[in-house]
Amino acid sequence: MDILKEFGKKNILVVGDIILDRFIYGDVSRISPEAPVPVVKVQQEEFKAGGAANVAANLISLKVKAVLCGVVGDDYYGNFAIERFGKSGMDTSAVVQLKSHTTTIKTRIIARKQQVVRIDRETKVKDNTGNLITALVKNIKKADAVIIADYGKGVITKELLDYLIPAANKLKKIIAVDPQTEHFFRYKNVTTITPNHLEASSAAGMPVETDAEAKRAGLCLLKKLKLKSIVITRGEKGMTVIEKNKVMHIPTRAKDVFDVTGAGDTVIAVLTAALSAGCSIFESARLANAAAGIVVGKFGTASVSQKELRECM
Image (cartoon, rainbow, N blue to C red; front, side):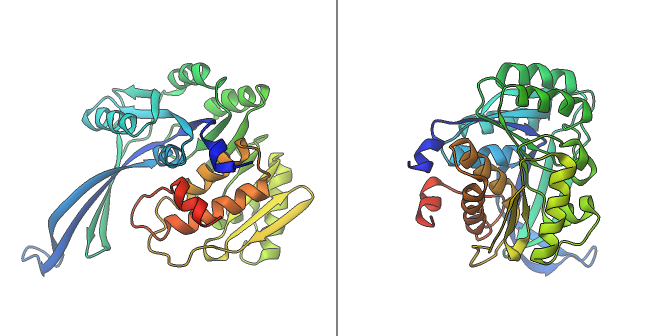
């Protein structure tokens, strides 16, 4: 079976915090006379999908059908994001616009390929659960899998998870979570989670530096959360993948690390796409690890294509 061809048959629902990533590129030739800071002369500006939207963008790049569910403001950038994401191929019918919310924008100012400063424009989402559940009811049945992309901006709440996880389990859907530390123990009874080593260490209350420590922490979290599997991403040390009776350490595939922005989004997207296509968690993690090795060699929020992934399989 050609796994990558199977991706085109899958429909994945991405639920989480939507972020608009803005990149302003320029050059620095002098220091401001007003303060000891560089003056950046703007040469180029671009917007990319961030947060849960970048997870969906990675799925679209892999030819997977992606439905994005989250919140943007009823403002200029909210309308801009919905239009832009829709044109890229995402189904944005489950995106809720709220007048009480300001669309989250992360602006990175880049000079000579170095980030000078990041400016965050955001407010936490409030009173969203009812609207989101209405959107989820319309989409969860047709999904092959659900990704919960939690960036701590207020979309993922206890009330939302109390509906979403039981509903997805009842329909026997794959549930994959890119977790946030503060919500860690609300992700019980999902298929898999993908914490980084710091998140896993914080949740388990033990260090996650060596392979043995990663195994011990992973098994602890597997039991506490009643998971089928856990994938701990460990930067240059690769990944540790754990099921109840099997542990595998996968070395990193990255040759050149240029920018790690959004690498976790790529991991959860590829991992879930592969699981929905019938791969084991270990096969899926190997593929996700290879994909991460590709995107960290790119600048800014990036995704991986089927062609790129096929070349490194």
